Image 1 (cartoon, one colour):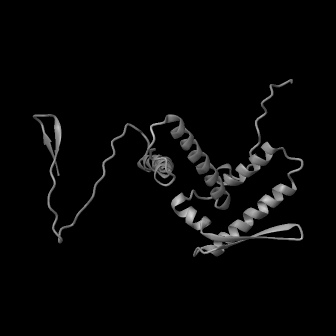
Image 2 (image 1 turned 90 degrees about the vertical axis):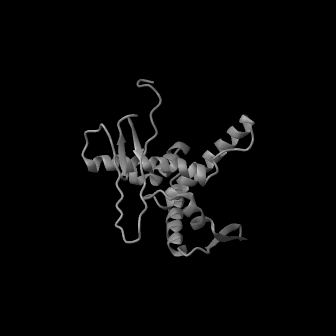
Length: 193
């Protein structure tokens, strides 16, 4: 219950006890100066929450919450290492499932709980990975698809520069947003050169 306290120009919050047989309703009030429809405003709110989830994930699942040293040089180095690993892992997981961002809390157990064995015979090295996860069959299919993508990229890699190969990898990782387009490196030379 909210009571208006006109003497102090402040709102006073009063809470009531709720019995077992009472119906309880929860209300949320959003005050905004936006002139959009309510469904558009709700989507803005969801988009904002989605953008904050990445920072929450970095802090709570990747260790970017804080450091125990007061040495700024070492702290900065660790922050950069964590950011680099987070970026690599995000790209890897996006290549496996480009339609959805998967947080580390679920993607690491899904993709890292496996046993690997490397064998070499006749100058050929083979790596066999056996997943112990409940969704091992689906992961196997996705990893096989990713392996085919890299083999195709490797077989076509001769005419491609390393930058062009990276753009192909990024295009595959972000296909959801690019809608199938292949990224092209920008032409950094001015016209006429």
